[in-house]
Length: 214
Image (cartoon, rainbow, N blue to C red; front, side, top):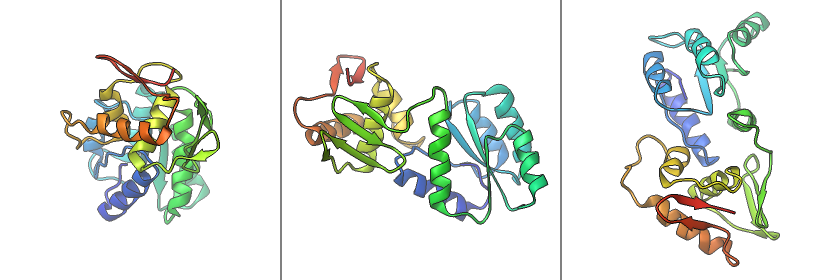
């Protein structure tokens, strides 16, 4: 989330975290540029009018150097020519301020499905049915009642399509940059998730590597 209005940036970040996204926030273009050089973000929500490095320049940079990262551009300008100009810079979607949080979240969900590899709208495996957009998760027709991080971890394991996901990858994708890298939060979350999923247990531990749903 790149937005210089800190109240708006923090509100959007908190809303998206409720949708089980891991969200980092930058309040200026220079900070965003530094983080984009380090982290492989799936989606960037980018304000067009930023202090430091302009939003237009960041958008062009992402389009040229990070083709797997999707950009949702925000602006206060509602004119058609402004929206067209933003899309011409390489933005994947455009949203005019003020906007409804539910619409922004829906657009981020849609862009996230197109990031890196195209993920199906609904994730299914081992009798589990998970819908990220509606934030519903069930197994064999039984609602799982997952907490936010449990939902996010399960979504990452399902997206892996049987491949192993390391604890480090889960920390990066389901939490944010402020999480302690030495925490045992992944192990605790997986333990709680296993209880809710029940038997037969779908999450397999691969010793020294991570977790998978085969």
